[in-house]
Length: 136
Image (tube, rainbow, N blue to C red):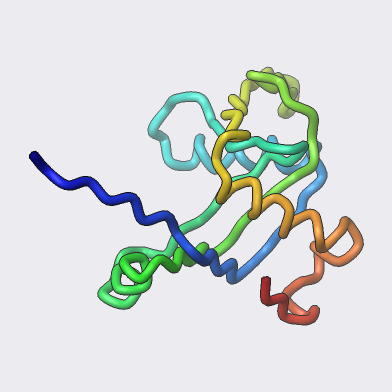
């Protein structure tokens, strides 16, 4: 019989945080997906009133080593505060678009990430590049 071990991340390091208003976040997301010319419907994670996307670093020996030690590094987290709907219908330049929201309420790492994002508040999250470093 094979042994199975679960090793959740013990730490998430966020290198850049960007809060956008919903009227900017959802069109930005659609534009990102359309720029890749891969087709499909854009999707984001959602929990506790926050829709967000994470940007990962490209795999390297250093990032793989950190991951194996239980440390996840997000190059950036872009988010907006919004209510949950399975699909957000938006209007971009007169045409309709859809963004799917994946409810990740059952993911404890994402719940902690959103708590972290909310700790910045709307007035400070927009200017984190020049703001104080946060360690949580």
